[in-house]
Image 1 (cartoon, rainbow, N blue to C red):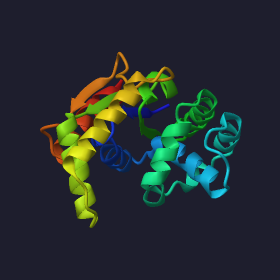
Image 2 (image 1 turned 120 degrees about the horizontal axis):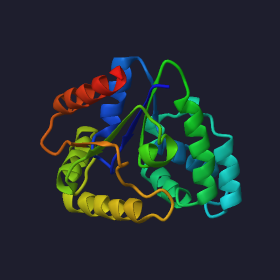
Image 3 (image 1 turned 90 degrees about the vertical axis):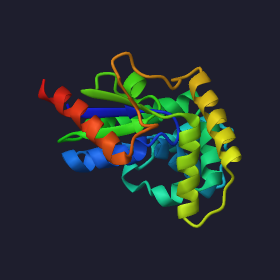
Image 4 (image 1 turned 135 degrees about the vertical axis):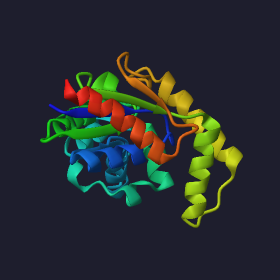
Amino acid sequence: MKTIAIDGPAAAGKGTLSRRIAEDYGFHHLDTGLTYRATAKALIDRGLPLDDEAVAAGVARNLDLGGLDRTVLSAHDIGEAASKIAVMPSVRRALVEAQRGFAAREPGTVLDGRDIGTVVCPDAAVKLYVTASPEVRATRRLDEIVAGGGVADFETILDDIRRRDERDMGRADSPLRPADDAHLLDTSEMSIEAAFSAAKSIIDAALKH
């Protein structure tokens, strides 16, 4: 099974990189963060509570991984709701099961998230941990918002990224950390082209074995 696991903190560039890699190798791609957002959106759309773990887990178990719309799911309120249900163990278990099912697809898959190499696919053929300094990540996020016609403040984004890192790394269930056998890729000083080239070298070498 050819699974490429890509983990890393928010705004490190792993999503863009993962999509490029999947396209290059002809593999299926799943942004696992969207599975939490899709579960949260389904709860909101149905007027269901965000603090009932059994209800949220039931929705997570019936989630269709085929219809995840990044544009719709990127909304701020959905992100806030997703962060509330993402800490619920039974929701995480249900979505990890769905993500593992996706990882078994042929001819191969690229999954990106926070716990792919450590929890979801510990036997992945290749594991990358993509990171960058909080300041660089905040700058990228700001540029992204401005390019989309939005308005944002650098310090607010930086605070948000640091808070999110703390929450992701301090979580009791599946905290964000590199797998012991992950290849570290710091993209602070890299363009997306350079990061893609570095990742491709690592993947090519690993898939030869």
